[in-house]
Length: 241
Ligand SMILES: Nc1ncnc2c1ncn2[C@@H]1O[C@H](COP(=O)(O)OP(=O)(O)OP(=O)(O)O)[C@@H](O)[C@H]1O
Ligand SMILES: [Mg+2]
Image (cartoon, rainbow, N blue to C red; front, side, top):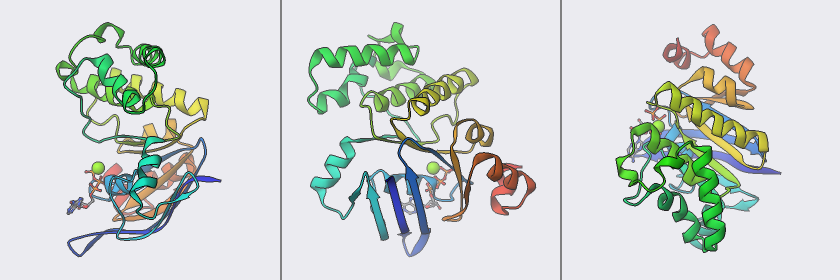
């Protein structure tokens, strides 16, 4: 069964079609990477898949459930998913409390929260900052925190919008290592956007090229990246050359 199934998704802003009939099916434990030029609709698509925005038309099924706009169902689904925004946010509290927060919202008991937070701090290499106010973190550290806060909930679907854009090489490596370990465990379905083609090659099971609101090509990373590099994908190849 597909964990994420989008059928003919259209999103219009002010009479302009930003997504023009997206069809996408992502299986359990798969890492699907969306590449595409700026303005091609990556964030818009991820927001719709993450139930942060509604499509103008089309159908969406998540975890086997039809997303028909019922708030109760959406709330339940959102609790089983996590979203890392393009511009990550930190709450005005300690790093540990930031990571613990989504578990508190879910009513998980405190000893379990403590154990999970501890292991996320280790995974992100930020144990020594545990008590620091998260607003004092650097951009790269805030990005790592946002990913830790998403992973700690053990989501069935994880959506990430350019999680390594503007990071220093060391933070990119750390984030990729965290994502690679999620992929290895195969317990989470991951959909991620990136501008970074080699990164798509390193992490993806499949890559989709989004150009001008349409998925122009979907396939295994080697084939898609070769097509992009050959210049066979017009607008995308212009950007990525
Ligand atoms: N709320 C909105 N109202 C009007 N237009 C919007 C809105 N949100 C996005 N758009 C437009 O939709 C198009 C796609 O935007 P989107 O943010 O999805 O692109 P993107 O592929 O994520 O770009 P980037 O790589 O720069 O993050 C852009 O032209 C953008 O200006
Ligand atoms: Mg974007």
